[in-house]
Length: 306
Image (cartoon, rainbow, N blue to C red; front, side, top):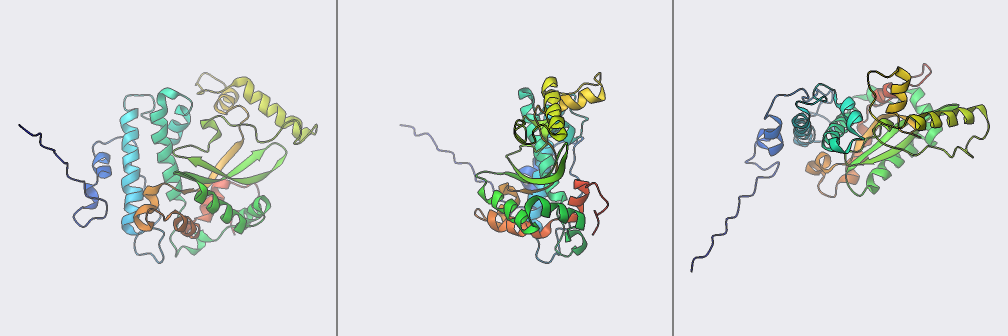
């Protein structure tokens, strides 16, 4: 009686093993398979020769160079020959978010944007000027959260509590007649914080929050105007006002992301281990480029620089 032979494939060497070169990983091979529009951006964050670095040189290479290249390669594969081939990543994620037929394009575009946004807001331990929070930003943070320490605690606790990978965002929120505020918003997987990318409920109860004041009436008008136009992808033939309303989800809150922490395992697992997310997000706070955060926030008065 003939016995079938059981063929056991060789296990692929894991990242960081002595016999594996950095450029031979599956991510790197896939990323170098073709030359396309979306390529790995340059970062200002120096990942070598640091004091108390957030990530080791190898950990940084895996989390940024290899993973970001992999995501961009998948995005290029899905957009070649389509209208999105020549669009930038943010325009692509906003334009494909509400169409189930382009869910794959959205996922890779949004993940590429989010991962880049996270790494772009990092500085090394020795960059003291960028790590100092500008006075005007600090004032707004204190108004929104009570203190910078409270914001830190809220972002770290939110990241710890997420059951699954994603991002925790600090966002600027603007409403008619209401002072500019900041809030913490989590998104899971490749979810986007931009209101144009999905439906959102209105931020306040229009019946009770601001009443019949001029500010309340203006808020209600804004909500009804957005609802009347529905959602969809703006077209070139529409006026600027109509394009803005179509791009904005009914009842959506006008918010701008200014900072995020990435809780995907590919960012921290090499240096911190499977259970190392808590330690990673604690260390992340000490590597935030607050000067860039203030620029992203674009606060109204002139106190952006300390």
